[in-house]
Length: 211
Image (cartoon, rainbow, N blue to C red; front, side, top):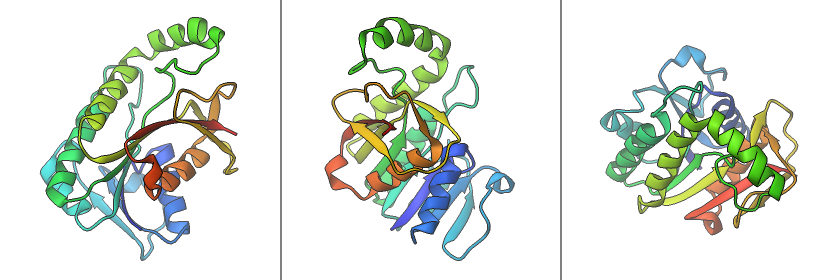
C-alpha cells in the first residue's frame, strides 16, 4: 500500500513507519523536524516536512496514497490541540486529495465501557482527572473523525510500553479489552497497519490490548 504517516517521529509513529517499510509498503512520513525521524533513508520512504495544522501544506503528502495513518498525540499533560486540530487539518487535506481511508490512534483510558467495576469506578476516574487535558484533546478528535464521513477507524490502546513486537493483540469493538491494561508500541503499530487494509473495521472504534 501507499501510506502517509503523521506523528512519525513519536514512539508509535516510528514503529508504524519501520513495520510498514519492512512489510513492503511505500511510506510518506510527514514530520516537522526530519532529524527526529529515527529511520534510515531508503527507496520506499519519502520524508515530507510540513505543518500538521496547515491543511494546504499536507495535500501533496496525501495525494495518490491509499490510506492515512495518524499517531499524533500530546507530548505532556498540559493543554493540547494537536489531536483535534491536527487531525482536522489532515481530514481537510484528505478531502482535497480524494483519499478516504483514515486510521487514528486514540486511547482506551477515557472510555469505561467493558471495564471491570474496580477499573471503571476507581482507576478510571483517577486516570481521567490526571490526564484530562490530553483526553479532552483525543475525545474531541474522535468526535470530529466520527462525523467526518471518511472511511475511518479509531484504535484505542491502553498504557503503552516499549516492549517487543509479539503480534499477540486482543481487540474489542463493544468496549475495552477486559483484564489487559498495556500494549507495546510495536504491537500497536502492527494493529494500525492491519486496520488500514481491513474493510471490516471501517467506521469502527476498536479497543486493543496485549493478548
